[in-house]
Image (cartoon, rainbow, N blue to C red; front, side, top):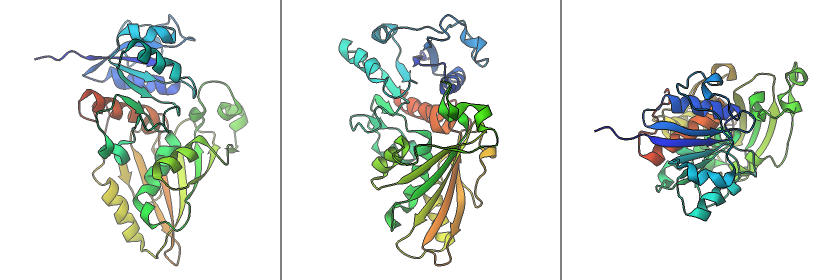
Length: 317
């Protein structure tokens, strides 16, 4: 018996993450695109921008109140922060309840929404249809800290460096290759949204200092962790292996991972585990592709769970 494919709509599909999602949907046996919205690309063929897509669909620009009438089973909101609620309210107003996955930060602090970082929140899954997708940096930070959270003597400090795709497609200094050339650009050095997000979901204060580098995609988070008792390196590494050894999209390495080796990959890498002489401080390095495990791939993990197929469907592992 052939099961009908679920229809998925992507709102705000012009950005880098939207294109990655279209690629994942194009390879998915149980999903088909219902619509992809973008005001800037309205009327243009999707396959002209994302060659992996095979079909006649064109970008459209429906108003938020029109979205419920488009009858998608799954709706992905790939919008800037602060723009998701009017879309969600449009569905609530007419009593429609598709799976909604929000890629912005708008619902990451809302306890009514499921926070979808599968490697850390899978056991909290209760079949929710409102899913908040974690931030890219927040994913790397939490994966770096969670296995040692019960042993910390002080707030972890994370130094982050991301490629400029993380700054989106709206022109700014942070995605201007000329200004980034031979440069490292610090920003939001206290109070960054992902600092708040990681602190909220880990239940401990986290300090985070982000920077933008001249490369396009991929991020590195180097986290300094002070421990309440002295530990050996092999015991620290064993904790990470225990936490992630069976995870298909997290790889624990001996050496510190390089961002150049994670671009276009769907998994995160964690390694380094450099210990201080007294064994009470460890430095952990994590890398991931901010557009994939930091956004589109993680969204697809959550979508797959919500529609009842294997979590890794269409994700190369």
